[in-house]
Image 1 (cartoon, one colour):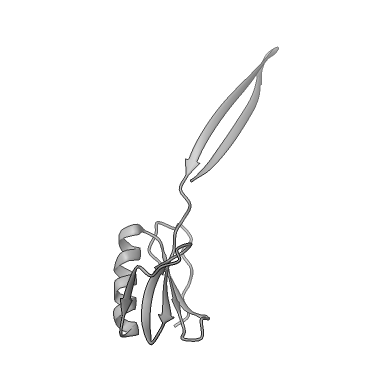
Image 2: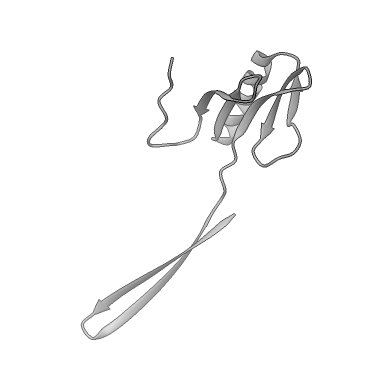
Length: 101
């Protein structure tokens, strides 16, 4: 969790006002579909362990899609060599990424 402090300084005639706001922002966690020891797994960003292991990539993508949809996060689908194949956003982003089809 990140803490953001905003200081607002404004003047009214000869008086100076200082207003302080503290906001708490949750760090955004993303989900990743990755190749893992002969199968595929879904892993949260920053985590060292898999959330769940699957034998096939479509099953892992389906689970990752439903998990990201519930959490309103992004899903990164990786190729077997580790590079990113696709990226899907399920959050409330006002400027969602455009997917190449």
